[in-house]
Image (cartoon, rainbow, N blue to C red):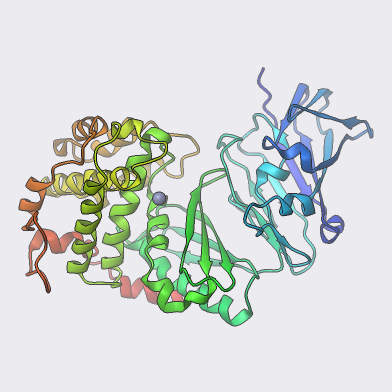
Amino acid sequence: MHVATGLASAIRRSRCPKGYVTARGCANQAIAELRLRAGDDAAAYLKVMKRADGVELEAVDGTVRARNFSIGECFTAEVDLKSAGDADRWGLGRVPDLYYRIPPERWFWRPWQIDPESSIRFELPDGWSASVPWTPTGNRSYRLGATPRDWPAQTAFGRFPEHTLALPGGQLRVALLPLVDATVQERMFDWFRSNSALLLSNDGRLPLRDTQVLIVPLPGMSSPVPWGQVSRGGAAAVTLFVGAAAGREGWQADWTLAHELAHLQHPYLGDRGRWLAEGLGSYYQNVWRARHGDFSATEGWRRLDAGFARGRADGPGPALELAGGRGSTMRVYWSGAAYWLESDLALRAHGSSLDAALAAFRDAHLPSARAWEPSEFIAALDQTQPAAGLSARYRKYAALRDFPDLSDSYKTLGLNPDGLPDGDLPAHPLRDAIMRPPGAVSLTANRDAVRR
Ligand SMILES: [Zn+2]
């Protein structure tokens, strides 16, 4: 049975400081059988759920069922934020009176299916902000959109500002949890802001119109960015765990930020497309950082070459498309990067580029609220320049158990497959074009725009 309904929820301000949140959902149509669900273990944090007439609703196997919901009728769910925050495996779920970082799967009871136009509005104590993946529509309201209800997401509420970085093609909403003192917070935010121009290094425009960025500082941690991830629930969003003790130099030398931002260029590709997704991140983390001036073009090639060597050293494994699960991480990531390098070369040989193919994909299909079959994603990119044969190369790669042979591509690039020489590589039109922002796009100008 399908239930489609509009849903408007409000988090009541009065309950927040005490560690409870009250979410209210209202139906915009009559529903014969309403089924509400959050994540699998959400019932453990649900204090009470009631209908408008005060009748309590119970969760059975993680699902709350209610019959004959009338139009305009609301339910309220009271969730214990304290225990939901304490359930965070890293102990970063809450600090009393400062913030809660709790994924929607623990607090957001919603119908199994909703109208994508459904909205959620937050009522928070003064000085509190929300960091959520949904699309803002003003007045602390957000459009929930059509992503599947079980896609993971990150949400945080607390005494922190949400900074909006307006860039060509959209905005980044950046929140930094108040886990370190104000000076370190500011330094960390400055680092993110000056590197957000990485996202402009394809054609000067963001891959997405609106993106949530959540930065979780780790006090005392000297590893610069030990963990980063892109979640897809609600919309694609970036979470970065940043070691506070690493400092600006340490953060700037780390590749995780560039890698995670590069993931915003593709839709969710599922487990079978993990090699393509991680390959795209691994390829662009180096290309973008060279374009951004973090290091030279030679250094970009050196890092790609070192990555391919790590992938090769990993030995054979299951076919790439079956390798979505555990193990052979280096082979999976760097075989994927090899796929994108070879595709980029083929596209450039036919007057296009991977940048152009991804920009065309963005314009036609992003943001996307659904999972894409890996072959479907490649077929869409292939339309840009079919002569480059992205789909045929995809089928060949997907079945590979060994690391791909890159010797022809290295020849095209004027690189020695047995190792790169010491010192700077000589000028080479194709090699240099890849590590340089395309066209006349000036990242310096964009960087200034970010600072203003
Ligand atoms: Zn990744």
